[in-house]
Length: 194
Image (cartoon, rainbow, N blue to C red):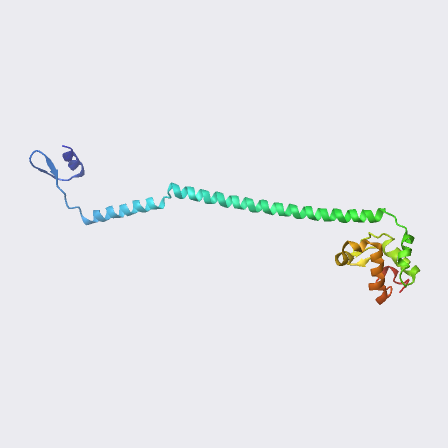
């Protein structure tokens, strides 16, 4: 009975046999078969175009990882900038502190005369240079990278902390500057001693 109903609905003729109806296939025109194949291909294409749940999840994970990478890069850049700013601020503070120390402490230039007098140069002239260059401050640092009593140029990078030792600074001024060039290395006495 069911076969009869289906056959009637679909339009397939039935053959009667011993009490049961058998659906007989009919020849479907070729164009209808081609249309069915085309429809199958369209449906299959649409199904293949649709991303699966795994595809969607993988894409979401990739997007999330990319966003995390961007955030990490931005955070690293921010940290590096803060460190650079902190280092610059510390360097500026150290320089300000050094200037404050050299400007607030008053030194007696004459206290260095015994050290200056150890060398065979005109002591009074050497004392004048020392006075004009550092005002007698053995820790003096100029903006032009000069250090110590006689303001030895690039003294800190060349000789280290011993450039601030009065004995060493005076010895260096005599042996490496005055002996070869007289007073010309010290611009503070230009027009006075040379």
